[in-house]
Length: 393
Image (cartoon, rainbow, N blue to C red; front, side, top):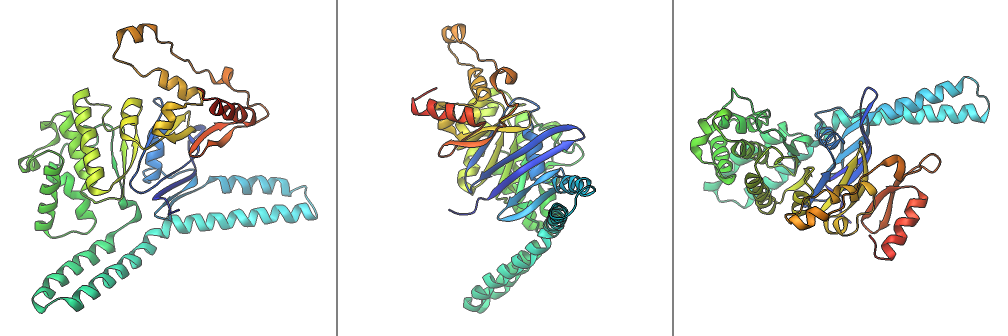
């Protein structure tokens, strides 16, 4: 099986005593849409911001294209602190074991800092080597009249490689299309900013890319000279999409990109993202709380509750066989355009204290059937397995 494009391992994001994200792990394969759903405040956006390094994660790791681009060290520091406390009264083999734990966690901190700080320095020589190899063959086979153009293209690609970072391959579409755009920058400057930071200096190239992406997202060239306040909400979100896509990313984090829009405009933006995904081969982490939209757009879905991932499965599997009580509660709240059904529908309320007894047997993510994981303890695991065998729920 090929390496996933993005792998999140035991991601934790704490703000003081508030555990916004607590031990979240998932993978996203190239070309798929992974939906992350849950109620407001459950940690969906914080997860996305930690992945793209807008936040320094507390602990855990984020791997992109097989390289660790973010690493938290708090868990290693805590392990060292606990081992040092236990070391005071220890002797003999126990003392040696604790000292080994301290050495191991210090080494993990060193590796985490190295990967976090040096991953981009390790990327650039690799990209330069790729460019050299690519153009060596093309220049050797090119006729003399094409060599000058190829040399210019090679110089451009080398300049891009010099300014490239792993995290540049991840771009984000933000929830609020008003607050995410600088009111003092024109649409042209907003979209071109990333290209300039990446090292593009040729204005003709920037113009061509900006105008092409504007038309691709349903706007026109004349919009390039306008400011954000001159656009509707749907148009502003299209500008946000253009700003992300113009960087030619491998992964887009779409943070509730349609929640602030009218229903008809939501459909237009979702269809635009679908077209871009198909035409450009994009991979998408789609964060939302509208389960109907997520089911339509996503290949796999992860459900979050209070900072934890409680269930994960393919879109069809999750809707056909929701197992975790919170997932069933979310699905029961989806409105249906049928007055008779709505009048008689029974909504499921989720009370974690009544549903679970985790005083002794703690929950972990367990695979009930291939690809369908639920956070549960051993007793719940056995019950969920029986439910699946009996064709419930």
